Length: 348
Image (cartoon, rainbow, N blue to C red; front, side, top):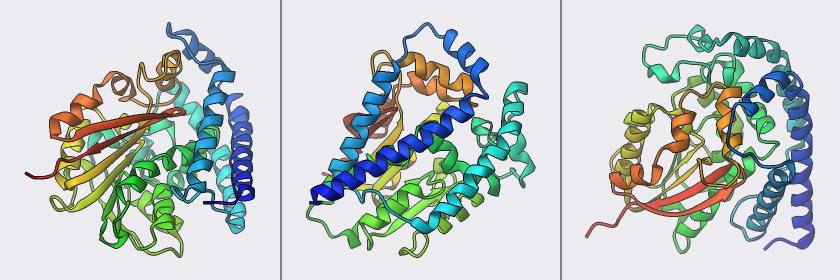
């Protein structure tokens, strides 16, 4: 258990982070004002008030601090030497903003194809999600991705990722972490896996992603911590043995997949899990998860290039995963995201 002073410092750090990225968000939003209003006006669904939105964000921060105090997650990591790098990434994002705005206004989202061959990639992946330059395929995109996402979510992206630690912590009770294999699919820049490594320094970890640029960034982000097994591959056909993983995690992946790919990934998750293993799903809220928030969710793909998000909002994910044989368990809303825990049944 953490000392009360440590908890206060963690909460202050979380709050300062939110304040910083909220300011960056407001700066950037000033460049999108007219389109944002148009997107909001086109929705007939209700959206949360500012007070409700930040009330839920405050609750998320408090839960994150409580989990850190209980030893469930690693909490905030203070890395003073990283400040210059953060500032550099922020400046790079702001420099890229005019091009992003222009592509959005013109409906252009194919610059990913300018960054190497896309012959071995599924068509849905070789495009500019969020209108970001180079999609998920360029070194520049990988460098500024985390700043972009934290700005979008007011500095809460890492906190929402850490909500996945509760079911992981519960699953590991009484077990030797050295014998537990965890796979994070679509691991991106490795933010979540760095936190897992900090909490479980001896656990065998693997990160799977389609983007070489993002995997390189993930390896750099891990720094001097114990290595992770980085794998380049498609989550629809994972280069992973059957029944080899005790824990599989997926964070902010499924809303970027078309319907058929979403189901193929679900089948693959079930295949690679050991009997008794768990799958921890973290992704956007869907319609009906928070009464009064559907209008905000509906407006999101109008503001950002998210071609499969509309179907995600109405997809029956519980039925999709149940059809693979996974037992769908508890769901917990965490600000703009939700965590769902599932388990592969033990063999009889």
